[in-house]
Image 1 (cartoon, rainbow, N blue to C red):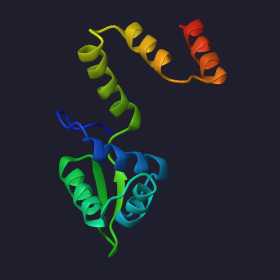
Image 2: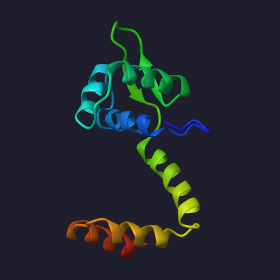
Image 3: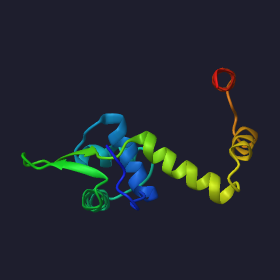
Image 4: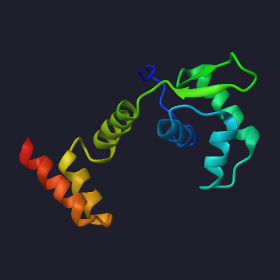
Amino acid sequence: MTLIKNTKPTEGELEILQVLWDRQSATVRDVHEELLKLKDSGYTTTLKLMQIMFEKGLVTRDSTNKTHIYQPNVSKEKTQNLFLNKMINTLFSGSSAQLVMQALGNHKTSKEELDEIRNYLNSI
Protein backbone atom coordinates (compact mmCIF):
# COMPACT_ATOMS: atom_id res chain seq x y z
CA MET A 1 0.00 0.00 0.00
CA THR A 2 1.30 3.44 -0.85
CA LEU A 3 0.00 6.94 -0.41
CA ILE A 4 -0.69 8.50 -3.77
CA LYS A 5 1.73 11.41 -4.26
CA ASN A 6 0.22 14.77 -3.27
CA THR A 7 -2.89 13.05 -1.92
CA LYS A 8 -3.12 13.91 1.74
CA PRO A 9 -6.29 12.71 3.47
CA THR A 10 -8.60 15.32 4.97
CA GLU A 11 -9.70 15.09 8.61
CA GLY A 12 -12.93 13.31 7.62
CA GLU A 13 -11.02 10.92 5.37
CA LEU A 14 -8.62 10.14 8.22
CA GLU A 15 -11.56 9.18 10.43
CA ILE A 16 -12.77 6.78 7.75
CA LEU A 17 -9.27 5.40 7.21
CA GLN A 18 -8.96 4.75 10.96
CA VAL A 19 -12.08 2.56 10.81
CA LEU A 20 -10.74 0.73 7.75
CA TRP A 21 -7.29 0.27 9.32
CA ASP A 22 -8.93 -1.24 12.41
CA ARG A 23 -11.28 -3.51 10.44
CA GLN A 24 -9.19 -4.11 7.28
CA SER A 25 -12.36 -3.93 5.17
CA ALA A 26 -15.87 -2.60 5.62
CA THR A 27 -19.01 -1.44 3.87
CA VAL A 28 -20.13 2.18 3.91
CA ARG A 29 -22.77 1.21 6.48
CA ASP A 30 -20.11 -0.39 8.75
CA VAL A 31 -17.93 2.72 8.55
CA HIS A 32 -20.90 5.02 9.10
CA GLU A 33 -21.99 3.13 12.23
CA GLU A 34 -18.47 3.41 13.68
CA LEU A 35 -18.31 7.12 12.93
CA LEU A 36 -21.66 7.69 14.64
CA LYS A 37 -20.04 6.55 17.89
CA LEU A 38 -17.72 9.57 17.64
CA LYS A 39 -19.85 12.27 16.03
CA ASP A 40 -23.14 13.01 14.36
CA SER A 41 -22.76 12.31 10.64
CA GLY A 42 -25.11 11.54 7.79
CA TYR A 43 -24.90 8.29 5.86
CA THR A 44 -24.78 10.10 2.51
CA THR A 45 -21.84 12.19 3.75
CA THR A 46 -19.92 9.02 4.60
CA LEU A 47 -20.85 7.50 1.24
CA LYS A 48 -19.72 10.58 -0.69
CA LEU A 49 -16.45 10.82 1.24
CA MET A 50 -15.69 7.15 0.56
CA GLN A 51 -16.45 7.62 -3.15
CA ILE A 52 -14.05 10.59 -3.25
CA MET A 53 -11.43 8.54 -1.37
CA PHE A 54 -11.80 5.80 -4.00
CA GLU A 55 -11.25 8.35 -6.78
CA LYS A 56 -8.18 9.72 -4.96
CA GLY A 57 -6.76 6.21 -4.55
CA LEU A 58 -6.91 6.27 -0.74
CA VAL A 59 -9.18 3.20 -0.66
CA THR A 60 -9.96 0.29 -2.94
CA ARG A 61 -13.47 -0.98 -3.57
CA ASP A 62 -14.69 -4.50 -4.32
CA SER A 63 -17.74 -4.01 -6.53
CA THR A 64 -18.41 -7.67 -7.30
CA ASN A 65 -21.34 -7.82 -4.87
CA LYS A 66 -24.33 -5.52 -4.49
CA THR A 67 -22.76 -4.05 -1.35
CA HIS A 68 -19.33 -2.54 -2.02
CA ILE A 69 -16.52 -3.53 0.33
CA TYR A 70 -13.84 -0.90 0.93
CA GLN A 71 -10.26 -1.45 2.03
CA PRO A 72 -7.53 1.06 2.84
CA ASN A 73 -5.10 1.60 -0.02
CA VAL A 74 -2.66 3.54 2.15
CA SER A 75 -0.83 2.26 5.19
CA LYS A 76 -1.38 3.78 8.59
CA GLU A 77 2.37 4.10 9.15
CA LYS A 78 3.06 5.97 5.89
CA THR A 79 0.11 8.27 6.51
CA GLN A 80 1.32 8.99 10.05
CA ASN A 81 4.81 9.72 8.73
CA LEU A 82 3.44 12.07 6.08
CA PHE A 83 1.57 14.15 8.64
CA LEU A 84 4.28 13.92 11.29
CA ASN A 85 7.07 15.08 8.98
CA LYS A 86 4.97 18.01 7.78
CA MET A 87 4.08 18.93 11.35
CA ILE A 88 7.69 18.76 12.55
CA ASN A 89 8.87 20.89 9.65
CA THR A 90 6.13 23.52 9.76
CA LEU A 91 5.19 23.81 13.45
CA PHE A 92 8.43 22.85 15.19
CA SER A 93 11.06 24.28 12.80
CA GLY A 94 12.30 20.79 12.01
CA SER A 95 12.93 19.91 15.67
CA SER A 96 11.74 16.48 16.75
CA ALA A 97 12.80 17.33 20.31
CA GLN A 98 10.41 20.31 20.42
CA LEU A 99 7.59 18.09 19.18
CA VAL A 100 8.27 15.46 21.85
CA MET A 101 8.56 18.03 24.64
CA GLN A 102 5.29 19.67 23.56
CA ALA A 103 3.53 16.31 23.37
CA LEU A 104 4.77 15.13 26.75
CA GLY A 105 4.08 18.49 28.39
CA ASN A 106 0.50 18.76 27.17
CA HIS A 107 -0.66 15.16 27.33
CA LYS A 108 -1.06 12.88 30.33
CA THR A 109 1.42 10.13 29.66
CA SER A 110 1.06 6.83 31.50
CA LYS A 111 3.97 5.13 33.25
CA GLU A 112 3.80 2.36 30.66
CA GLU A 113 4.07 4.85 27.80
CA LEU A 114 7.03 6.58 29.47
CA ASP A 115 8.73 3.20 29.95
CA GLU A 116 8.14 2.42 26.29
CA ILE A 117 9.64 5.78 25.29
CA ARG A 118 12.68 5.19 27.55
CA ASN A 119 13.20 1.72 26.11
CA TYR A 120 13.01 3.11 22.57
CA LEU A 121 15.49 5.89 23.33
CA ASN A 122 17.87 3.41 24.97
CA SER A 123 17.73 1.16 21.90
CA ILE A 124 18.77 3.82 19.36
